[in-house]
Length: 360
Image (cartoon, rainbow, N blue to C red):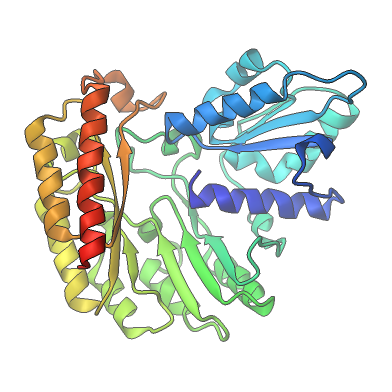
């Protein structure tokens, strides 16, 4: 899954270590097996169903494991998970992971199935266990959920509406992490630059960039509609802020961007890129692009190809469209043939490889 999922896995580990659980990398040794899941693409879900299938059979004399499905798939599929995989004991959505130790007690001691998908907001305490997989780098969540409702995206339906953490809580988490030897912090949000609490996103970056001992501060993922010149100027002024911007464009066609509900045009995106590169010297730029969105014509794809060719991204994450349950685009006719999606994806991939080889 996404980096938010990576952080959620750390949060779960931190919470359960405090409760006395021990971790093992060997599923055969485990009493509890948890799958932290992603619903952004069908491929990620298919892998989860496959892994669950491997746990279905219990060998003679083997004690039944407690199996939990947590994260975005849990929120999206709810009871269907119990139907498709009856041996699963816990279904826990992203906003309910703070109570996971309690749910495990229910499953272990009372042998009861637990469905926990009703929470709307997490408790901030879950981020303060001090546990990080990497002892030099830490992801710090500054906002949760999303209000953009891009027509292809399942995030608002599985992670909820946009919620911003308190700036002082974020600052306290960063200071604690740095005190433990963390040197590199990455702010996380589904739409990180929409942050607004007692201060805005630029103010938060400015405040945290002054924490003594912090060497690198970065952030993902930004949305073009919330970008500001002030952000670029701060990036240029503060050496601790990494000169890297991940700015998903998704398509170079205004018609497709409108169908995606992205809130900007290809022209506006190009203007943002020009402004970023004129202010942030040698700033790196990456993006996300979806090919084969419903209704995408050869001409629409050509516009995407030309934008990628002109902008010359330092790196690009390229995806073939797949409909996601509960999203608006799932109601659209997925009319771009699979072989066309594969061809367009290959063309963009080849272009990006050439750009990477030549250098910007």
